[in-house]
Image 1 (cartoon, rainbow, N blue to C red):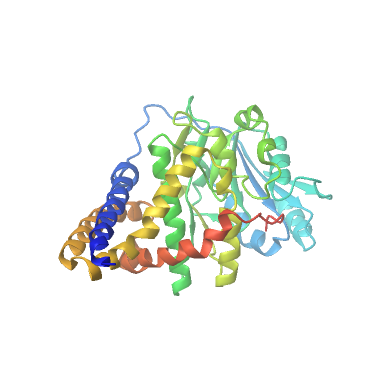
Image 2: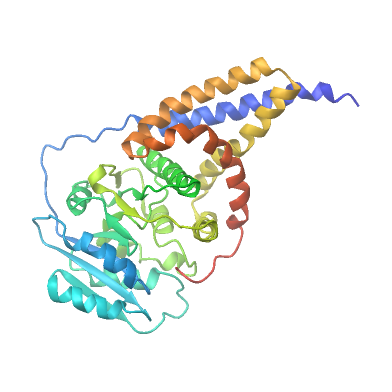
Amino acid sequence: MNFTLYWPWLFYGFCLITFIQVFYYLFFFARLSFYKTKPKTTSQTHPVSVIICARDEAANLAKNLPGSLLQQYPTTHEVIVVDDNSFDDTHYLLEEFSKTFRQLHVIQLKQEAKFIPGKKFPLSMGIKTARHEIVLLTDADCVPASEHWIARMQDSFDEKTEIVLGYGAYHKKGGLLNKLIRWETFHTALQYLSYALAGQPYMGVGRNLSYRKQLFYRLKGFTSHNHVPSGDDDLFINKAADGKNTRINIHPDAFTLSDAPKTWKQWVRQKSRHYSTGKFYKPIHKFLLGLYSLSHFLFYPLFAASLLLYSWQLALLVYGIRFIIQSTVLYPCMKKLKEQDLFPWMLFIDIWMFFYYILFAFSLIRKPKASWK
């Protein structure tokens, strides 16, 4: 059999995959690249309830909770910490904080919620207890990037807005793992923020997410996916968000920051838990995300095959077109999310993503563990 007859089809496949990639960059990701916040003719400050769920997070709360408590916000606000059956010193730490900060309210949970694994029950209790219509969610291991975090996030709400998607970044530190984690976080944000701008919001991150209590009650909270340990952020947003009720906020003052996992094992466990919820997304979102991931995964193998087996000149030409478009779109996005130091690593990490997809492919079909930590 003459296999050389099939080599042109490898190149045609490479061209098709490149076209799909370019489509995503120009139709979706370019929206974030050129995004500018529209100036508001009128501005209103809303009462806000910040909600943080914690289990055995005494060390993180001692370090990060003051960032939420010391916000410069002129309107009524509160910070609710839900202590979910902690066995460490969380209770005593929160008692001490409560003596100093009147806006801190602590919910002490003493029993596990049967048949509701994960973070959903403590978060539901926090939302139910919240005094204000707008709730702003973050995690115990996160700290606001500025003292204007509450002000910036709530400023995105208007009469039509029910959901505001924020960016939860990681602290910049040395080492390859930190860069890979931050790239993956940027890459995920690139997708959910761009899709929201395109009228197809599909997820948010619990490290920095805000919505109205009325929306939560209208959808009966997390009842449609209470059986799934994760998904208190992305599955709820996947069900609740649409092109009219969702906005994004990428002002640097509206970011949150947290420490990235320090070991490969911790990161793999974290991402595996997050990806286990993807199978429950709406069909249109699974299709769009799956097609992009598949085209990204196949890009470099088909490039290498076209380079070696067909025409290296044509293969490099097609690759160059994609690289120029990719760089032109991604760099402004990186600047907006303050991740531009990753740009020199873009080519290396883009190739690494081929192995990333292999590493986490099993998480898409694996049954998620019940723990939310």
